[in-house]
Image (cartoon, rainbow, N blue to C red; front, top):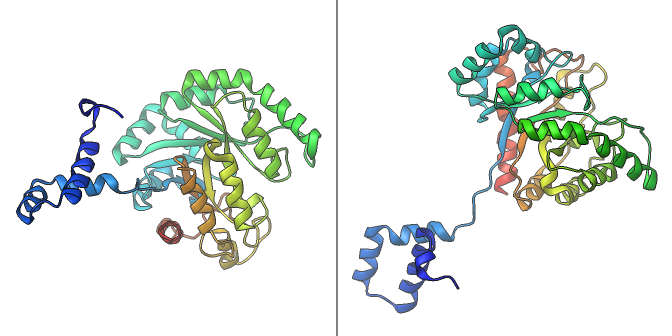
Length: 324
């Protein structure tokens, strides 16, 4: 046991509290301790750490809306960071170039928003050098992209293909390390990372902690318990969790009420096991409330205010899941 000289203030308070209970101090002594705040500190010390979701607002939910209109919405959704998407899903990444790095940095400061992520499926995993340097300059620690490789593989062939991809990423991960950036690969459908096994192989074979996973339930079988077990298996390799379900899909035109079934709390997927798994893993990455409209590039609802309201409705549902 450590000596008393190494106790933290919180540990000392907890110890004092236990001693008070064990020794049966008088009511006056107990009252004095309460008045001094020691018991309050001890109770706090014995509480379990509070787990919370760190929300990331995807700019593409607002379509091609001016990023100046989106930034004030970030705080309204209880997020502190924005994820910039390029065309065709959004246009805010191109808007950054139009505004300029300095001007965009000023906008972030004005609205007290961090640039949490740059999503660049358009560049792929092997053309991110300049984007990583941009991320470093804007204090952004995450870039999401897709994998390159064959699809429809299983077993030893899948492991080999994922291994080849991980090996090919090594020089790019060296740049990521120098820039303080993590590259997260989404388990996009119809590609190398389309299966849970591929995700597990990437987690195992990744040559650096700078190579992580962007976890999208939409692209996986909609089995809540299986998704929860996969989250536990991947653990700290997840850098982004998309609160996103399949619903009725996002590849054809349909009424808005059907499109919105991709959002948490609207479609049939029960997010409670998934949130429980994130809590079990002490997940500290981003959570992005997400869906795709059809066609891409339009907001998920007609106005900025309506989009923010829908994000908050989904967030309230996730918070309920978290409470349970």
